[in-house]
Length: 476
Image (cartoon, rainbow, N blue to C red):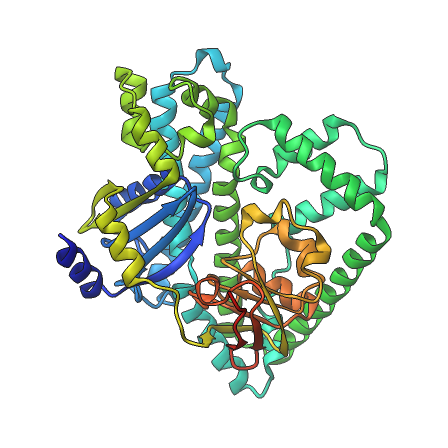
C-alpha cells in the first residue's frame, strides 16, 4: 500500500495548494461539488489529498489543473456568468424559504438535501473564478494597456471596481455604527445578520453579537484613527477611479473596456461566493445546530466528524458514528480522492507518507504574482484565520504578514504591516486590492508561502518581481 499511494502522489504531481480551517463536512461538500459539476470549468480535480489536524486542513492538488482554459473565450465567459447568476438566485430562494419557516416545522432531511445542492453550486462557481483562470484575462488586459504606452499604475486602476462589494459595504456600515457612539445589542445583531461571513466558524447569533461588541469597544477607543483611515482609503479609491475614467475616455478602446469590466465582474462574483459560503454556518446556524444535536454533539465537533452521507444516515436511520471515530477525526484524518472516489482514513501508513513526501520545503525563495509594488525587508508573521481573533495589533505592527489569504478580520493588522504574502489569490483578490489601496508591497498566489516561511524568519519581499527570499531562518 505504501509504495502504491506514494506512486499515485508522484504520478498526479500533487503539490501544496492551501491550508485553512475547513471541517470534514465542508471538505466533503467540496467533493460533492466536483461530483455534481464535473463538466463545468474549474471542477475537474479528480485526484487530491487533504490532511486535517485538529480542524486545520492542508490540501495537496495537481500543480496544474487539467482544464486550464482561457476564460476570455466569449462563449465560456457567458456560460460562467449565467451559471453564477443562477447560483445566486438559488441561494436567495433557499434563504427565503428557510428564513420564514418555523424551526419546529422544518424537515431536516429536506433541508440537508437543499443545503447540499445550494452549497455545492456556490462552490462550483467559486472554483470557476479562481486566479488560474481569471489571471489569463488579467495578463491580456495588462499586455494591451502597456501596448498603448500607459504604465502599470493605469493597469491597476482599471482593476478597481466602481461599486462597493460586500467587504466595503461592511466597513461603511461599521463606521456608521461607530459614529453613533452608543448602540444597542439589536444594532449589532442586525450587523451580524447582514454580514454573517464575518463569523465563518460561528453557529450562534449571540456569540456573533458578543464578538462584535468586543470589536466595537476596541474600535471606539480608536474612532479618530478609524475615521481618518476610512477617509484616506476613499481618497485613494477616488484617485484610482479618476485615473481609470481619464484613461478610458482618452483611448476609447472597446476591447480594453470590456476586458476590464469582465475581470471586475468575475472578481465581484468570487468575493460574493467566498463570503456567502463563509456566512452559511451563521445564516443557517439554528438548523445546523438542530442537526448536530441529534448526535448530542456541539456543531464544531459534529461537523468535523460527520460527512454528508453519514449525516443523512443519522437523520434517516439514527445511525451514529462510534465515539472512537469521532475522537480520531477531531485529532487528525486524511481525505483522499482518487479518480473521483473518496476515502477517509486515519491509517498511520498514509500519514507517514504525507509527512515524508510533503516535508517543509528547504528552499529559501518563494515566487508569486506582484499585486502591489515595493521592496521591503523584515520579520515574518505567519497567521491563520482562527488565530486572528486572539492577536493584538501591536504584535503585527511593522511585520510582514504571511497567510493563506486575507479576509476583512485582518484589516486592523494589514494597515500596520510592512508587506503581505499570500498562498492563494490573484491580482483581483482581497489582498491585492487592499494592498494597492494602502500602498503596501504584496505578493499573492505563492502557493507555499505559509509552508516555507516560519514565524520570526527574516525575509525580503520583492513585490517588483513577485519574489520572496528567506534571508535568515529562525532558530529552533
